[in-house]
Image (cartoon, rainbow, N blue to C red; front, side, top):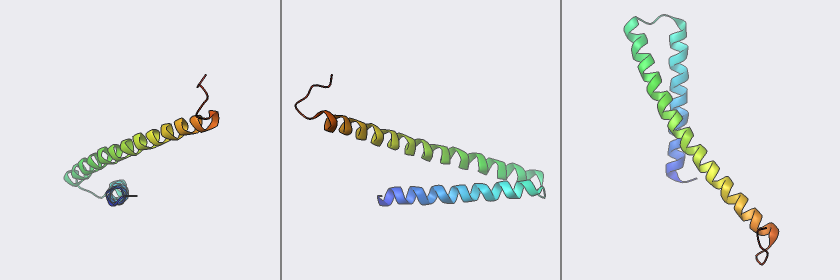
Length: 84
């Protein structure tokens, strides 16, 4: 894992933890309307950021899976055989 990926994972984890904290605090019901709105806004921003990180991870996994499938197919049939 590259330093950038490690940093992204760490920040993803930190964002998820912060989101959980916001939800717990809001569920207690002791926030003012203004505090609730501010927490909600922060939560929406965190959800969008986490969704973007997960989307990029999904793309990377899909690409790696496709590469692995292509390599496996070539190895199974041999270099001198046709693919059909």
